[in-house]
Length: 293
Image 1 (cartoon, helix red, strand yellow):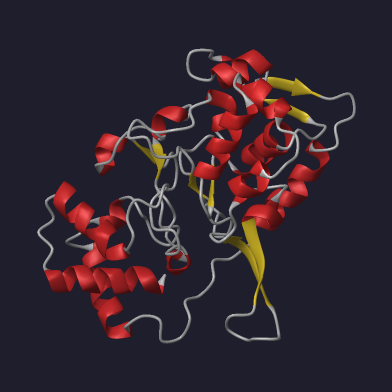
Image 2: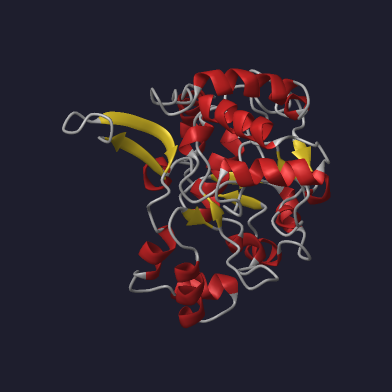
């Protein structure tokens, strides 16, 4: 995301008004197969050299990502696959609804401008400046340490001057309201009480940000999932995802890697992990509330 916004984030949608065109700035593009597109490049020798492998392997990895996913961290740690053999790529997160939210990505890393500078300099190899000495850790980020990604400086910086305006633009992107009739309003009202009360969701997903004001990070153990993706980030934690506009996230699933196909599956996971004792009706009502945000 960031300076390549139009690649990973949709800009126009005709679904609700065919032939007219409504902007969808900041929506995660869950249909675009970024890896397959990059794999079509006629020359990938520079990528193979960076990763210390061959072009055939690079193409295999890129084609493993699938629609709506990208693996930015691959180019700093070289970890293409999870221990279970599945791709290490994550879903492209929305770029809207970030005003007031501390960190930008699934596993933290930094705020809006940090990630924009990261992508523009390290992923797109534009001419600019980027400084993050955490990437000098050769044990955790061997590719980045070897390539000197912790301190990048171009003779002519064409990226840094763009960061303030881009940050303001992104922070101004409001989450989209759910379509009329897309959720049960009465059930959602009941679900709001479950969210704030019995389920305890509001403790971390604090309204109206629906993430913690402050350092909004948790270990995999805290939320009942594996640590693989968290361990690829500097703080080794997952960010509490802001929930506004959650109804747009369904394509590709939920969580950073789409491991839960439906909101019902997410709620069932938390019900088990935290022993909430939610009834089937309370779980359904909670899902309707989440769809209303």
